[in-house]
Image (cartoon, rainbow, N blue to C red; front, side):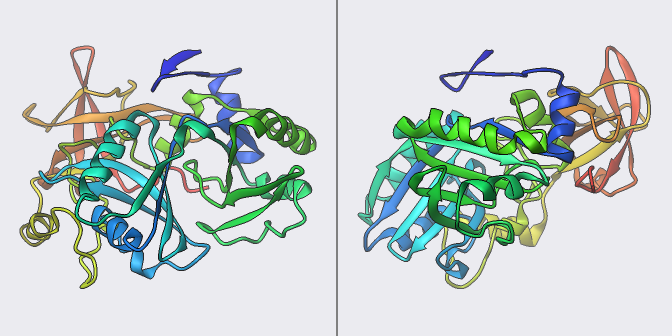
Length: 347
């Protein structure tokens, strides 16, 4: 157990390899109740969410979820988050635990001239991420509502484990499918026990922070505080796909980001695989063949699925092409790596 964003969180229950492969092959459950939940409601709800989100929420309809980020006014990212569309006047934003206070302050500042109704439900909401190829099959036992064929990034309100009005969405940050469920804190133990019981025949295991990190890294997903932060633009972070310059999408700092897209960025977040023995870690320096500094590692690990060291980091844009050789400084040695396309894991 370790302190994490004001909570005590489990790093692991058993080996990281076992937990990781359980999610890839069967089903694992993460207690992610530390995440933040903000409700945005009222006549100004659409206007506010469209203003603070880099993605275009006008394409959403009821029952859909969207991944996006809050651009700040200096070119960086306040946080990445999910938008749940209930109606044009009702949205749920799910934000990172370490950024709840910063995000809450940010959205309230942006709301000054709009006047949407904001509710921070983070302290009263629990969340489980039930992930893996067998997750929906197992969880179907706990609800009469059909969930096994729900499309990716959609949600339903349903009765689950005998508890009414549970929000279930086909979202997650592991790349192995599954769902996430939201419910009041006082129902947490009942629902957690029911999930473990329903998943028992499928080999369910509780999963800790360490495997959560290796799973998301194999998919090349960004982690706030590592791969993205207040100084990294979404275009540098290869998040252009959630940065929509549509006619209806006038988000914070759009003009500067549009200019950046037109002129190009000076650095890019890339994935790489080590070609020599050594595990890259955050803040390790990246060099070219002439040992000139070209960037820095943001995330790195030994991939449990691929059985090789992988990582992500920012490099000068001329070194961002797939197949480019780069060198990571590990214990005063320059070890060869190669830029590769993400995701690393394609199972």
